[in-house]
Amino acid sequence: MSPELLEIERKAIHLPIKEREILAERLIQSIEGVPLTEVEEAWVKEAERRFKAWRRGERKGVSARCAFRQIRKDLGWYGRQMIPRERGATK
Image (cartoon, rainbow, N blue to C red; front, side, top):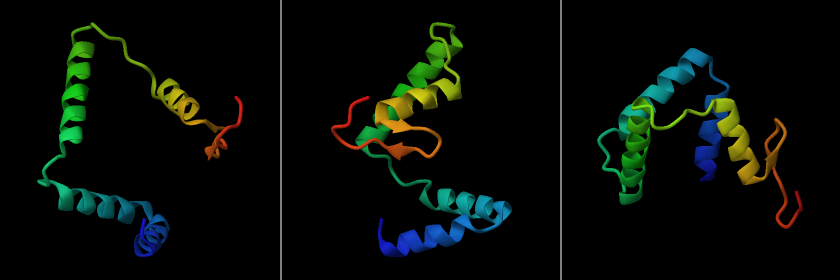
């Protein structure tokens, strides 16, 4: 990220929650209509395919807690501080 973006993020994080919500909504609205990349389009199709399979009862859901635990494990992040494991470190 650019230094300017980091400064904006630092300031935005300290806004009251309602103001952050309004800002987030406006930012999202500002990018709606921007065409998806080929990769993003493929992920949307994959997500829709998985959701339909879940609705038909063909797939089981996974709790957010389990999903995030697995993501952190896959990324090599440990504990609540989410500090990345050093490269080459053993598990």
